[in-house]
Image 1 (cartoon, rainbow, N blue to C red):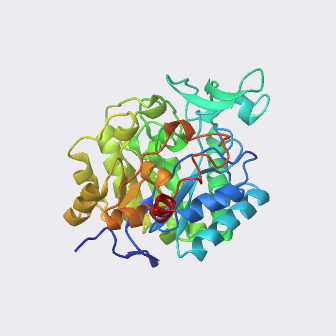
Image 2 (tube, rainbow, N blue to C red):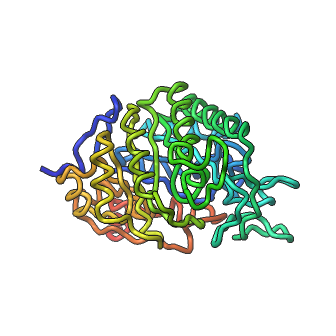
Length: 372
C-alpha cells in the first residue's frame, strides 16, 4: 500500500497525507505583510498534508532579506490570519517557520547604526543578504560585519521567538517550526568553528547547543511542545558554515535533546540539492537511532524515492520544496501519475507580482486550456 498518500497523526493533528510543503523564501511581501497574493499562493497548495511557511523573521533584527513576511507586528499577524484561514477552509494544515538570520544580514535592512548579530564577530565567506545598495536598489549584497551578542542578550532573542510563536498560534497557525538550519543564527551558535564564545553559550557541545535548547523549551512552555517542530541541516555548509572536530557528536547529541522533548517533529534539510555537501551516509541512521520521534526530511525527493523512504521506516513524512512552486496541485499530480512541471528559476524571488508565484496552473486547468 502506498504510504505517501495515507493520513498521518502529527501529535494529535490529522494530516490527510504525508506530503509536506517545505519552507521556501519567495520574497513577495513588499511591505513585510502577507497580502492577497500570499493568501492565494498558500491556499492553492493546501492539498499538502502540511504546509510549512516561508521563514518569518521574529524581529527586524532577524531579517536578512527584503520582502519577507514577518511575525513581529500586529499587521503581519493579521495578514497571516488571512492566509491560515484560507488554507484551513480547504482542509489544509499549516505551521509557521520562525526565523532569525543572525549574521546573514545587512545594515540597509536593519537600520542606520545597527549591525547584524551572531555568536561571534566573524565575517563569513560567501555570506550574502538581500538589501539595498547606496542608490536604494534592492539587490544581493555582502553581509555587513556582525557583532557578537552579549550573554544577557541571548535571552532577549529567545523571548523574540516566544512572542513570535504566540503570535503565530493567535494568527491561526497549527504550530511553529524553529529554523535551526542553513547557516542562520542557531547554527551560528552550534557550529564549533564559528562559535568562539567563552561564556555559557560557547566551548563545549552542551554550551553551543544551549541557546537552541533554551529557546525550544521556552516556546514549548508557551504553546505546548506538540505544536513545535525543529529544522536542522547537519553538516550544512551554507553561509560560511565550516567543518569542526566534534561535528558528528554535536548533531547526535542534539538528536538526544530532541528525544527528551515531545516535539511535533524534527525536519532534516539535506543541502545537496542547493549546492552544499551531502550528509555522511551513516549519519541519518545514527540520528534516527537516537531520535525516535516523527522525522521529516527534505532534499530532492521524487514520488518513488519518497515512498521508498517511508516504506523503509527511515522517515515518517517527506518534504517537497521546488516541485510545489510550479505544481500547486503537487499531491494530486503525484497520486495520478501526471507530469511534474519544472519551475522557472528566474521568477523564484522578488517583486514580480503573480508571475512565477500564483500563475502556475493545476493539471485540471492545463487540460481545460488544451481542450478549450
